[in-house]
Length: 85
Image (tube, rainbow, N blue to C red; front, side, top):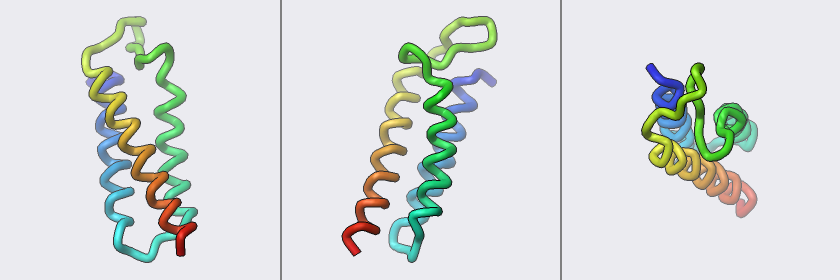
């Protein structure tokens, strides 16, 4: 499994977990915990890509970028909903 595939799987889990919070009584801490996992993936993102151990850039970077943006958007929306309450 490439690092991109690993990150993609992690992001899909984060997005799924964030989505599961919608419509429930959730806390900012729950969202922030998922944001920390998202931040760990962001830290691997250098110069617009996640590089493999050998320094190569595997395919799927654009899809990964879309997932990162989606996860940030969902987390932001959830925190905004808490502020509106």
